[in-house]
Image (cartoon, rainbow, N blue to C red):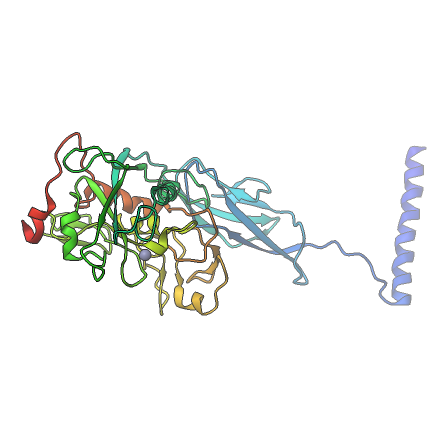
Length: 395
Ligand SMILES: [Zn+2]
């Protein structure tokens, strides 16, 4: 009985299909809804580098097109990580370091493969630095002109801490060097400073600039113990940070940095900060500290140089092209990829309140902290700062 009913139903259904087919051939093609089928997949990843266990994942973008070449909305796909199906994920992170191959698949359709690099999450030895700001004025009352108030210094130290000490997680590649900057509390003779981290004095005359001129040796605090920051008139509107040197016997000098065979301090080390660079939301001070610790700009001028800063994991771009047609905080890298510029070694036109260091930059900083010469790495507990005037011209 049941069998008979099914046979009858099947018979009617086949009739219906034949009828509809013949109907179609009589009246021409009737529009019929077509189920779109994925015919190609394209995978893009927000960054090629990240760090094991990083809070910020890499974002995956999947573009699917159907057989007619139209882009599909909400396509179905799976992500393969080293061939293992992870399901329909749109972000990737890993607690394990290494290189991983990512691919999007749907049925037989496979996307391009992208290799992402997950760096080892290192624990660096904690280091602490004493910073002294030499406020070089023209005799103005405290708080006026070049004789800036202490709160400007505190504000800039806050920006420095944000970049070097506080976890930002702005990108999947943001990293920290585990170094701490503090305002010096004593001078080279061991006297307590009236204002922490501040040494105020008048420049010899108004023609004197703070761009590492010879007269500054008289106000130079031993760079083995302090990071010297001169604040005042640079004469050209720019601030400067002095790149580190290594001993020429060092076999692992970070790329782009120089060496010296000089046994002792032979030049003024530190930072010269133009007064205009101290205002709110101006990140020049942490940028110059980046130079002091061996970092270069992430951009080049005229030509697009992809190894301009010797860091694989920063986006590098042509600054001349950008300045010709600025696009606010968005840049286009030498590889043609758009990115938001958070890096502290970039120039102006970045988002407020947000700067970071990349993993490769942190590796350079650590090399300088560990082996760079006259970088303020000695502790006042373990030695006595010298009179730098006596060391002028080689001592
Ligand atoms: Zn710079």
